[in-house]
Each structure stands twice: as structure tokens, then as C-alpha cells.
Image: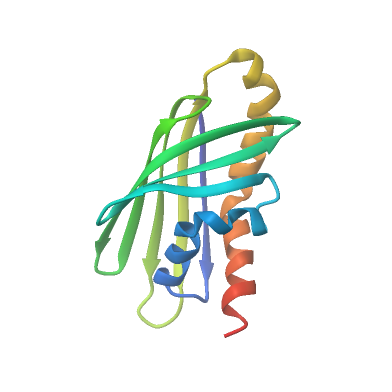
Length: 148
């Protein structure tokens, strides 16, 4: 099983960063490997999101159930696999609000690819993508929130 843990401190508040992560439909605008993002169903504090991604010429689609919990200065979004090319996949986005300035964004992601053939071709590319996800969202925040 692969595991990714990445974090960044940003000058944006935790709600702004959570909004970017929840804006799945706009992922193709700034994640070059994402060809489609969509919300399948939505409830009060959770939703099922799907995306199509293309890595090393291989296109796959997967979906996760995302559950959001707020606790004062910390917001956590839990991600659990619904469907896709993974044997297992689970993760958390954590958004820590600092009292004076900005926030800390953290991603923890664990996954295992189902198919060994797909695994070899796809896993290395997915490892690279997952390793850059936090930076991709930080860069997107700079584009979106620096304008305001």
C-alpha cells in the first residue's frame, strides 16, 4: 500500500482552502491530469465525488465519499473509496485555521491499485500526482484568492 502525507502553510483561511478542495467540477482547470470532475450526490455534511484522470496514457475513473467535520480551528474531510481502480483508498484533508493568519493544509492518502498490470503503468504516475496535490491546491488558491 502507498501512503502520501503532505502539508503546506498558506496565507488563506481554512474555509477558502476547503472550498477549493470541494470544487471538484473545476479540477480540470488546474489539475492537468484530471479530465472530468463531478458531484454525484450531496447530503448535509457529505457528498460523493467522481473524477476521470489520465496518467501515462491510461484513463480511469473513480469516486469517493467525502465527509466533512468541523471542530473549532480544525476542519477534516474524510475520503472513502466508492468505486475505481483501487483495491483500497482512504484519506483525509485537514485544514487547521491559525488565529492570526492563514491556515495549514494537510493531505494524508493511503491507496493500493487493484490490477498488477494497471498497477505498474499507473501507480508510479499516481504516486507523483498524489505527491503534488497539496502544491496544486496551494497554487490554485494563489490564482483564485490573490485576485480578491
